[in-house]
Length: 273
Image 1 (cartoon, rainbow, N blue to C red):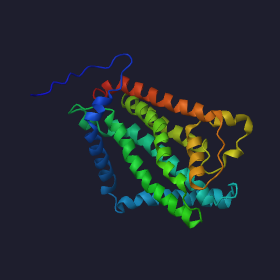
Image 2 (image 1 turned 135 degrees about the vertical axis):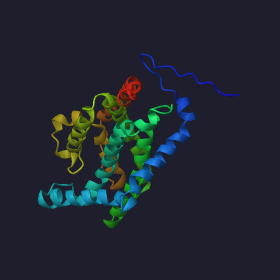
Image 3 (image 1 turned 90 degrees about the vertical axis):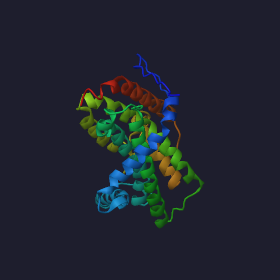
Image 4 (image 1 turned 60 degrees about the vertical axis):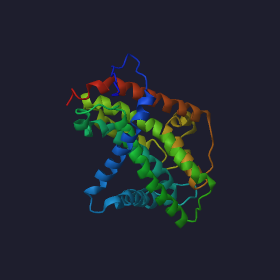
């Protein structure tokens, strides 16, 4: 007997249909594998770029900020200090951009068949999650070269990446749907991520920020992503403040807003081609 599926438009406050997502779970892996294959298929060096990009950026930052400007790193080798922050930042930045561009890249498929549209940005973030595991291997090897052996805390790194998925997916959902109709949002996201990079203690210690603005500075979810990464990988002392819980609440608010914006504008995706 043929199953009849009734497709209804979302209401004023759309609900997340987890059952429907579960039914289409295999499609997520199809998009993930397709995205990974497409990304490296036309590159001469293939997956090697996953290593070269972060290593090249790390080398550049080490030369500029470590040897020329001599940014203090609280006694840690500059390359290790930066790498432990650069890996989670790159995952967040790449995931946000991948989710934000996902609908525009898949307009051809969206206009032909029905499936939950949210699968597209979700699969884009999942793809970046697997890529970040490669970066994590680079980080471990780099730390070993400087004498920092992984401890039991290393098993918490995937959990940290999952935490960073909340704001990344939330921002990506909002921008991906809204920018299909209003193209200005993608360039604005690029500017916002560049500003966020400097507002996050990636290449400098957070202690350089004046104490008077630390409570506001620590509301940045990536602040805790970077600090927890250093606590995990190089055992840098971590002080938990009430701003952590406010930052968690902000991350949840971002993904709720992102889903609401996505559900609001996804119906206009095909018409805006």
